Image (cartoon, rainbow, N blue to C red; front, top):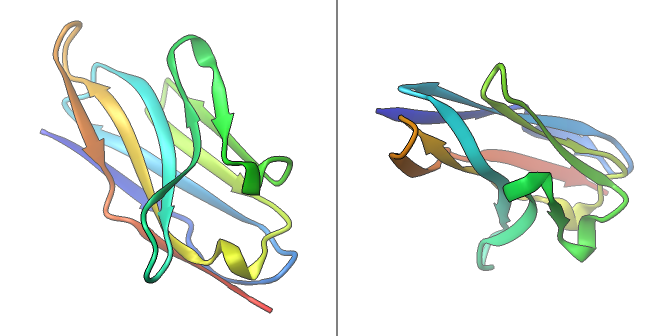
Amino acid sequence: QVQLVESGGGVVQAGGSLRLSCAASGSVFSLGPTGWYRQAPGKQRELVARIISGGTINYADSVKGRFTISRDNAKNTVYLQMNSLKPEDTAVYFCNAVVYISQYVWRDSWGQGTQVTVSS
């Protein structure tokens, strides 16, 4: 069984910074593509940033230049550094990862979400 656990959310003033972490635990062989998504009240879940095959990184236009995704493969952990936060960044942030439990078997896993609130 695989579990993704997010941490680092909270309340911050506009212009501030937060760093989210997402740790994979359980029967983890390695991580495949990983990403962060967010869902604001009344809106659909949207991609924020992701690392895909070959290490290519994609960002939503709304966060380019402000957010940075990274990961530590030795710790099976993905990070999202968020700088210059805006009130419109307020949402529940979810971690998503393709978690390999063996060389050829993988699970598409989601974390439980962590709330980020940016006050103006």
